[in-house]
Length: 178
Image (cartoon, rainbow, N blue to C red; front, side, top):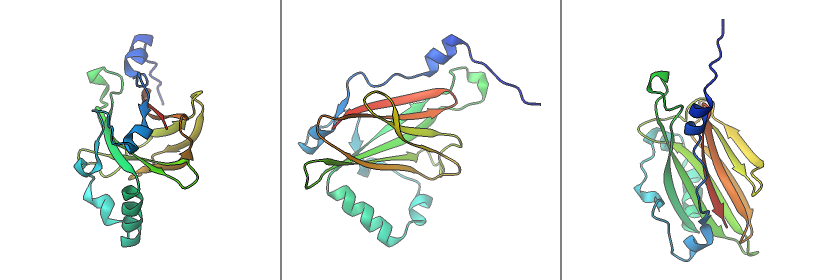
């Protein structure tokens, strides 16, 4: 027999983490200006099992892409319903973002979500969305025994988008402007 737990309004409000107050200006990354919460990718330790399954060609292709622009990461923390008795641990994810200029003036954007803290796989049921300025999902993926979630798209300077990670009624949103 299945049971449904309906969290209180207070629990839902505390579990939802609002979008960043000011959008991250990615074009400034190409100028060498970085926000304090964003770190160089070289400082991120990704579980070696993930890398072991990648072919040399895949790794070289990824390295070439990362070298053509600016890549930074930020640790996102999802705190499913702040009740410590719910059995849901705090979850940390690495959000890696790369911006590269394209010949036509647009910018190539690469978004990757990796597990951290010695986890090989993303948690079952994790949903990640790319949202447009109106907060409408334009891309989405859900983890099912998944090592990483990746999105790649292009946009023009001044365009807004957000990345939303969601698990167990807990959301984390980061907003960007190209």
